[in-house]
Length: 161
Length: 133
Image (cartoon, rainbow over all chains, first blue to last red; front, top):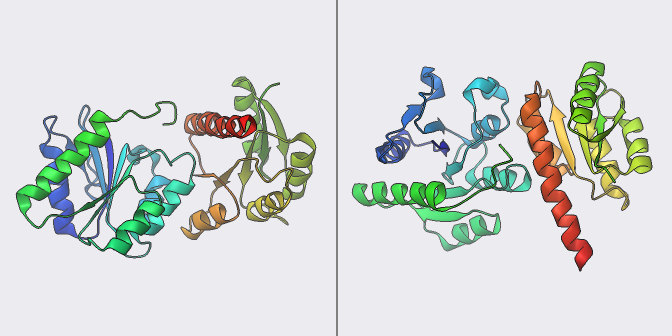
């Protein structure tokens, strides 16, 4: 029962990632805030936001995400780099500057394998930088591995939610 | 010595709610109703944490934070910004002025208490490590 925030402006990639995340044994259910679905008990909650500004608004429960019953503190943030309004690095820096959010693992999932971008992301405190594989099955496998590592293998402080 | 928290907010209801619930948690709580009073009390009391409202008349929370960061005696006190502002720009500005955490109003009291507890845990641990050196 994990909470995942997915920040991705490409709807095809977002769907693919959500599909892979849900495919994991405990078939979680997709919560898209747009279609007003109530999160089902027991499943993972995944919220998909389309730009960096919306991601920050979600994390700080403001703007379009003021309704506190529909937001959550994520256990994992999957972040794209090239995003409208506030880019991936902007979101990353903000979360890592906030002492109360800093421990949330952030995985950048980007199509760019540019060394400079990778180095910058790690300097800004990203937990993992993963490139998006072109192959569909590899893509799914990578997403599953990310989920399993950050949500099952690792331990995080419990008193901060 | 107990843990001291300073609450700076021009809204009397927020001050009352926070004072009441934080005292109940076992903290020593000091309240200020303006930015200027907030700075004065910070210097006098040296709290372990400041809960600071942004929108206040005459001196806003950002200016208060900037003032406190200038003085070495108060520069390291962690600040949690509390705001009813809706602009995404407010987040960036808050961290730019020296806040270490941010929460929007209306806040969930339980979440705020948990956040405070966690912030105190991590900031005090940091201070201890520094003292050991």
